[in-house]
Length: 443
Ligand code: UGA
Image 1 (tube, rainbow, N blue to C red):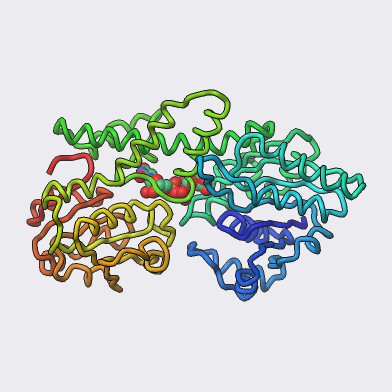
Image 2 (image 1 turned 180 degrees about the vertical axis):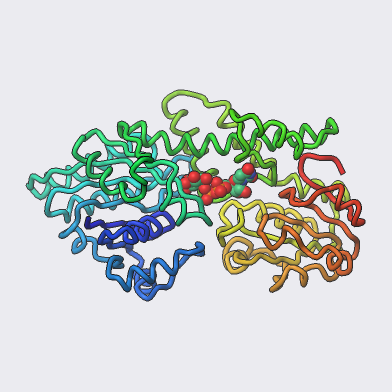
């Protein structure tokens, strides 16, 4: 099929590339000409394992094209995907200005019947707005073209995006047109073995809602577990054991119940807020979802509070080695990363930071920690330790899971670790002579 993907952000670029990999003829469109020029030469603006080689391969195979010319791309297009950003507006709701601008342009430029797909995460009711916007432009042009607007939310995770897209748990298609559903099913058929077709078709509004509910449910599991961790600590239980104890119940399961320094990223914080706003706009006060966000905001500072408890509020003269800046391993993304909040708090109190992250240091230097003065970046995790009073682990990158503990002891002023991701066994750490602080168990 001929596909146009509008927006070469995370979702657009990964979707376009994976559709091309399945043999479709894909054109990815963006208004950022510099980005498009880079992509034509295989320069990927984000870090995502495996993406670069598939992009390059499909450029070579002529299945994947990059352009700024939407009008031209729509001349030969079966399905147009809207995959532009939906940033958080000031009131927490999703800002639809980019989505509706694209809808307007589709209405201005389309020349034959088309399926328009909302791939961006958009609030319930957006497909109706997209439809009305396109129709208005067609009316202005005094032209009668048929089109359907379909909701096809994306569930991929950063760091695992390619495998999530190529082997999805499910594909949700929200459409009020049987014909459009049929074509969307055909598009996704190659992603499933014949016996495991996991395309779930439903009406548009339910599909739009499904995306928010999936993210809010996962965020709820995390906040619930973080709250339990804090209670465990006070009453003398070990949340790591409790986690295993409850996860073994197949109704609960082990995934997304890891306590830590809170969830970050571009999705959970934004989508939890947007769901709250949607409910409130309709006169409903979503108590549980509000609490999920509140617990998460507090959780980001639990490790900083442990440090203050130990050293006091004046941290002048103290240096901390930070291992991990990105919001999770496998990405250079620092949006809403706990590291931002923790580093800002510690430096405000006078501390000096030695930081290392395998991928996110450029993001930190140029954007998220640009204004932080008392921070120095190092090119290896061990280099951060020299003259540091303690090590603070904030992202569970694989290279942090089994470090040379003797080296840590040798380099740190004192053998002290604050672990915001519960990566080590506290009995073993005590045996190795460390003072070990973690989430959800008293030291
Ligand atoms: C999330 C969803 O998992 C995807 O299904 C969804 O498509 C995506 O949002 C989106 O809406 O685009 P992502 O933000 O890439 O994906 O990251 P996750 O792997 O879900 O992790 C989110 C945060 O939760 C991270 O900060 C992670 O450290 C934290 N987390 C996760 C925990 O604290 N505990 C856990 O047990 C699991």
